[in-house]
Image 1 (cartoon, rainbow, N blue to C red):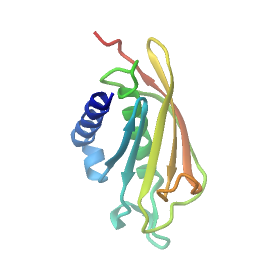
Image 2 (image 1 turned 120 degrees about the horizontal axis):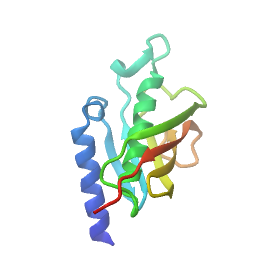
Image 3 (image 1 turned 30 degrees about the vertical axis):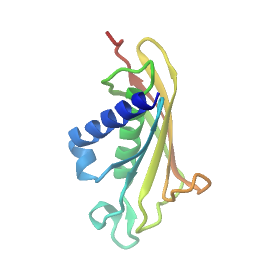
Image 4 (image 1 turned 90 degrees about the horizontal axis):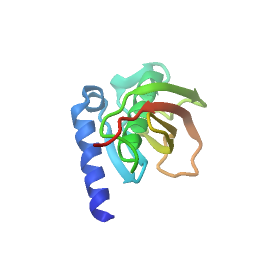
Length: 146
């Protein structure tokens, strides 16, 4: 099992290195489990949507959640090594606190032959009890493994 998690961790790191937007946004892998991934994105001034408030742009939070959900699909035991977003609904609950990193945790909770269903939560605190910044649900493609 530890070997599988090591392989999954390497797979997600490779994914983050290969995706130009993930590199540009500074996404960093925090944790991997079977069908679940946690990724952090640092706060940076160039990612702010409103310079007066210092609040991150919603688009960068969206990119973080989409990437985290896709990563959860590729590490699910029934998932595939490639995936694409079919549908992603994000509800923004509040602004992220300026100056704090945003961390998303996604879980792939149901997989069919061709679709994986995922949910995610983004927080600006490392604590799971912290209030969410946004929540997401989505559907992603699955290709059968050979």
